[in-house]
Every structure is written in C-alpha cells, then in structure tokens.
Length: 215
Image (tube, rainbow, N blue to C red; front, top):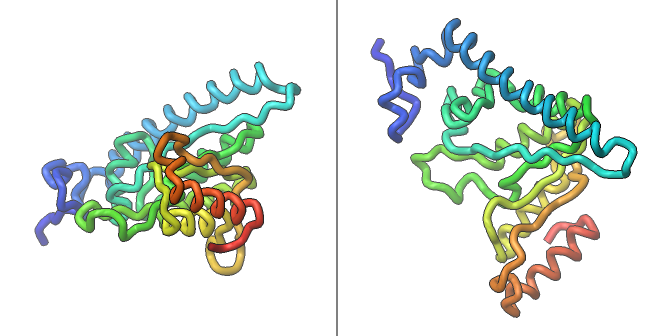
C-alpha cells in the first residue's frame, strides 16, 4: 500500500508527518516528540516555580496562557501542534500533562480561540477549534485546574458572542464534566468596539456572561 499524506498543504512534502507511515507514529517519533515535549514542560515548571516564589501569599492569581494551535487538528498527527512542542495527536492527549503541571503550582490554565467555530475556517486547513477547546476543557477538569478563556481575534458580532457563552460553560462529554470557566478576557478594546452597534451588542454580551445565560 502506498504511503499517503495527512495534508492538503505543504506538510505533504515532509515524510515525518505522513498519514500511514510517518515518523511521528514510530518508535523514533515517540522518543523525539516526548523529549521535545518534556523540554516544554520543564520550561513551564521553571517559570511557574519562579512566579509562585515571588507572588505566593500575596493574593495574586497566576495564569499561564497556553497557545491554541487548531490548524490540522482534524489530521492524525496534528503536525502544527507537534512542531510547537505540544505532543498532542489523535492517539495522545498533550494537554493533560500541561494541566497537571499548572495544578501542582495552583495556577490557572488560560486558553484562547473560545469564539471560533470549526466551519469558519478553510476546509483544506482541517481546523477544529471547537474540538480543541473541548479537549482542553476535559483535560483541565481531569486535572482539577481552573480554566480561563479569551477570544483569539477581535469579534463584535452576536454569533461569536454566542459561541463564547456556550464555551464558557461547557458540557464536555454529555454527562461527566460541566466545565465552567473561572474568567474570560475580551480582546480587544479599540475604536471599533465603541461603534454604537458593536457597543450595544457588547453590553448585552457582558450582561449574559454575568448572568450565565445563553444569547
């Protein structure tokens, strides 16, 4: 059988990310990606240890912002996440260990792309921000670490507001976890936000966030 590719993008020229027989899914791939991932976790441990040593006992809540990489989330290898150091594939959860690290330091897991929907992206990019947010919500619930969120790009429409409201109190698997965010950061306060129509929608959105109601 020929070795097919996971991607419709330039990733298809990289043998490491081939769908059927790429190195990412080999013994060597596991060794390399685990090593890369552990370096990322150790760096996080050092940063959190330094932060807690400074702010411990001072009433300061420590948030760690974890970048969202939802491109090609619909593939097996999740190549963009792997290249960033997140050892997250279709067969392996790369966010649980990060959540557990934050739990050890009493920090908050801050995640972005909360306003995005899967279908809003080009199909050939195989993006899945909604699925990624659910995976992170499940990981943080499992690790018992608070989850905070923010939008990735400026959005002033009710469609994005509705998605944020839904993601801020997420029923992760339909039965086990009701993952409610402890905080949300709205990006960004700029002249466009104060356009009369945008401001009207924003005020309504803030009220519903405060009340915990759907749009």
